[in-house]
Amino acid sequence: MFLLCAAILGPGGCNSAGKTGLTRFTYAQIHMGSRARIILYAPDEPQARLAARAAYAKIAELDSILSDYRQDSEISRLCAGEMGEVGEWTPISADLFRVLERAEEISALTDGAFDCTIGPLSMLWRQARQQGELPPPARLAEARSRVGWHLVRLDRDTRSAALDADGMRIDFGAIGKGYAADRAVEVLRELGISRCLVDFGGDIAAGDPPPGETVWRIEIETGYGSGVRPVVLAARCGIATSGDIEQAVAIGGQRYSHILDPETGLGLTVPTAATVIAPDAATADALASAVCVLGPERTREIIDNLPGIGVRLVVAGRVFRYGEAVEQIPER
Image (cartoon, rainbow, N blue to C red; front, top):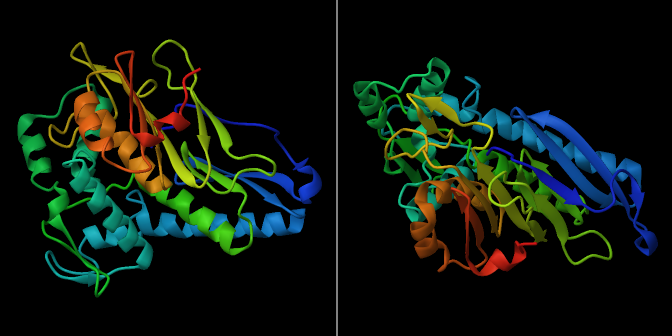
């Protein structure tokens, strides 16, 4: 997920939270190529430091499982056939299974607008952006033959996965950081830190709000529209923003986004940005990319029937708002 801009409004640094006996602490580290920021409230600095260290350890562990940039990651080894043959059931870790399971659900929900098997097309599009030329049709067709969320099968009884095509490459770029933010918040909660927020490259998992507050206030700058910066009012949920304001490229006189349409294998051609609020950050992360691909009408058809979801979608400067939770993204 690409962060456009998100600011956590309120007191910064290490600040006392009054009568609660809790103090605000903020930490930041680089993981998966992005900044992972943790804001938490704890009784003292040693407890805060211990909790943050455990949360970052979980994020680092997930990098070793989910990264398609690391040849030694679990998902890379699965795709390379090192853990089992094509079509063969292979036992996988609990975290990898959870991500694949959630990805399958969102792929089905969005008719494939979100598809974590898009890796072969992602690699081809990265090369096209660098070279300034569209991929040849034959190479696009070959890459598409290795893409399709139905090519991943899951067995919940044995916690196993099977990949049904040779040369698949699973890309968790539109769900991995959201999932990692969720798991980091889980770790903090297990250590008694419930008032916390994890912002992982713009994919945000919000725990209980700061002392004396009912929500976290998160300002979003999409870079599109009238310059309005919506403020997300959130607690115990996930928030994600996706867009292409800084990552678009011109090829042959046409503007293309870094956000890929799995159906065409090419970047979107209309300036688009989305902010999504959902029950968890993994869902928000995946949906933020998916609704950019779906466009306004298809987004409305899907989102308006889902509980706990809110979408603010900006397409070519026009703002569209969908879902029951969109009231938590007020315009101002």
